[in-house]
Length: 235
Image (cartoon, rainbow, N blue to C red; front, side, top):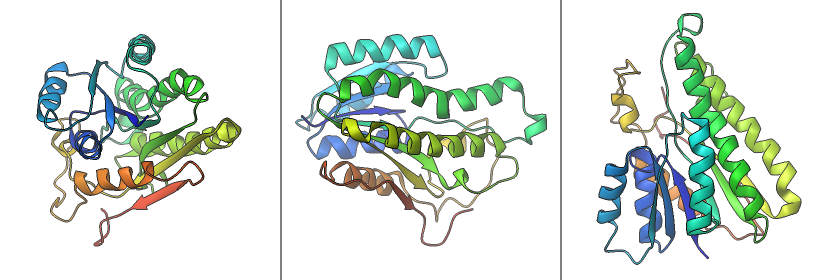
């Protein structure tokens, strides 16, 4: 069964990934905190043959994650591919960042991934599965004003490596797609003050097509980490 679970599904990379996978014949479980945008996306995918299931969940709320993901698995089944895409960022010097901003960055970019994996992977073990965590070149580069984001993505990369080694014997494959700058609505967020030239960034479609390529690899193969950068370099 080709069933993909995608977080952060209504904007940017997540939205494009949902469209790309649906057009490729995958059934989907789409998670976002905004049900209106989920319903809009579902209506756009009606022309595909894919079954589109929606989950409203705020990944900044640990208790909500536990309930929503459990209910989604019971209702829609266990995915064969889990794509942890949702993320957030605040740009601020580390020692001047508000505690709430730090905690939200770690919760959404890292802890929510841990929680979702903890709920889904035990079910995945029955038939095997693939976890794709969307990371960033900020996981190994230090960018001033982006410390919390860098820390969260660096920790996500190590989380993925440890998960991969722990779950190999259970036929669970875990990998990261490490991205350079991508032109997404994240740059329009009030939490980010930036004036980067976005014309040379990767597009969400380029990223989603690469994620599909990773997901289509047979069970006998694993791209442990795929780094995708704009040809002109990233900021």
